[in-house]
Amino acid sequence: MRRRSRAADPPHPRERRRLSTCPRHTAPGESWRRRMPKNILVIVEAPAKAAPIVDAATALALAHEACLDIAVLTPGPVASPALVPFGAMYLPDEVVARDSRANVAAVEALVAGASCPVAVFGLYDDVAWLAGDLRRSRQIADLTVIGTPEAWELHWLRRRVVETLILSSGTPILILPPDHRIAGVRHAVFGWKPSPEAIRALHDLVRLLEPEARVDIVMVSDRPRQAGDDTGAEVKRHLTRHGFVAELHRVADGGLCEADALQQFAIERHADLLALGGFAHSRIREVMLGGVTRRIIDDARIPVLLSH
View 1 (cartoon, rainbow, N blue to C red):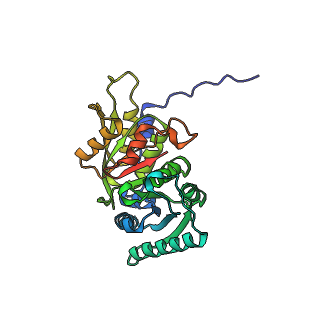
View 2 (view 1 turned 60 degrees about the horizontal axis):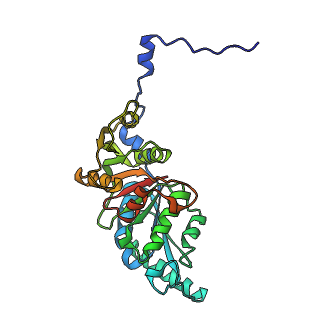
View 3 (view 1 turned 30 degrees about the horizontal axis):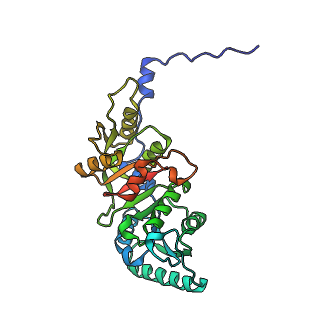
């Protein structure tokens, strides 16, 4: 005869208090060092424009005692950057390979004096296929770093690379403007919208935060708060249990798109970093990426951590 399941008797109040306590088993600094990223990948395309992002990524790797891999992409020639991905021009494979070796050597010169372990490698192909080549190279990392459009010659290629990695790599992506360094994160803004992508972004953010860092949890919405809409409080509780100082904000967009509202909030608060999930309307193709993600990809004015 099948037994009818029943709920266990509730614990004695004294037991309940004891069970709800979350003791800290390690010192904050020790715990932070254990969860720090130890394998960082940075992706560049134009060595002449890559120095700021390479320097920033090297400083980040040094601060986290991490190893740094640098992927140097060399696309075949194109008739005009405005025509990409069309307008590819033919060159013998050995010529493009020679250009790739020269680009790798130029980036190696940028990191010749680095105080952390650095490995530089090159990939070359037609511009339309390079993002796929990078994905298939299976470069596993804790964090992927990429610059804003100013650090790239071919903006279409950069967007293609970022969108491809967001949807397929499983690795958080840090977008760094050329005038920003981010050795440590003492203050972050977390753009919260209930979704699996945002939850993954939360976990990835925790790995970058310094002990006792401050986090502003921001929900952009013009509608009144509704009953049961307390997921932001759960995020705050999670961060507090990790030893961070968390504060929840519900802000109106003020006529801005959501991406601009989040960036404006982060800039006004002088945050080191903005973190959010790489929202997508569909996983079928990157053209379906949500508008917030696309806007952030194209116009990151502060360091942005994207997870999907």
